[in-house]
Image 1: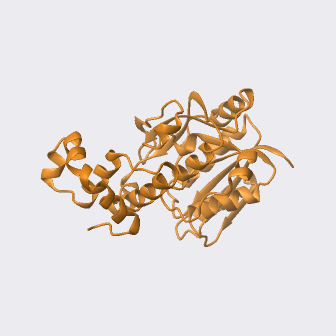
Image 2 (image 1 turned 30 degrees about the vertical axis):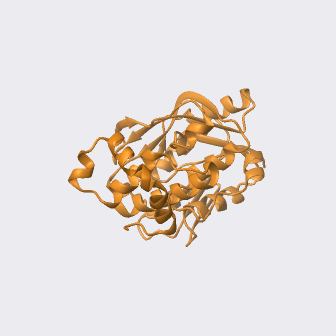
Length: 277
């Protein structure tokens, strides 16, 4: 049966948060036709018990070892083949309100958009708003400087997914950023000035290992799609590698000037994996 929108919830060991994510989608289903796929990577915590609690309201679910988040999202889309639009909601994120999905779908349909995005908040581990994601009006060049789209607030069509191809399963940290870049090669994105999703920020999302992986992937895709790395990314890389007091005290503009002659070397070492040279 055709459904208006499919929402995929990729998950792994997020038992603390996944119930809020599932309920967030179910609340949105009150106002728009949604198919739900919960794709769990074989969690060892309470995740499966929570999925079973809601299994009668979930269209497709599994709890088995997978190839990571991108693989889980692709599996979810494959399992919901007849939807007009898709979104994915990480299992530690939520929608801003029970009308979020309806708002963005109706905006896409009214404006004949294949891709669109909205505003987004940052929330803490208990769901309190702690900030606002720096979303901006769509600009292809700006996308090559930073990711101004917040993943839980992005919607894309089945047509776009089929034309652009699946989420890149080699990506572990920048799978959304890479996908936005790929979509941007073909489509202009619509921007609805409404709060759609909320991204959860807490200690486990900010580890140094994750930051290093994020920078490596970001450098790689920026070179692929834009052919250059903005200096503020290079400064972030150096500060991540060498978090010493003197460097962190220098103004970012001064660091950009000092590092400019070494930018190609820094980019090459990051992409090749020599993260600490």
